[in-house]
Image 1 (cartoon, rainbow, N blue to C red):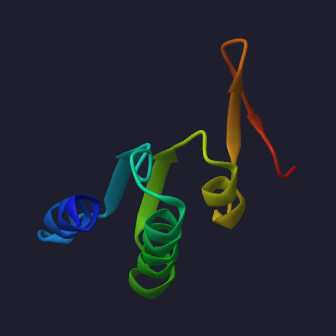
Image 2: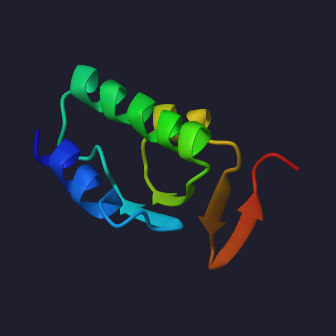
Length: 79
């Protein structure tokens, strides 16, 4: 619940950019998956730009673009 409340609070003022650092890091897999689906739907339904930092491969695979930081360099995973 805390993660969903934090997302709702962050979206209250309708920002153009949403920043999240390990948004599902402390969640069980089922709740994490629900949060991942919520983030994707917010991106698609509201056109909300998101920058999400995660080690979760499942979440990363749901994103439209993935950048990986390796040895101090950002690499685009999908190009």
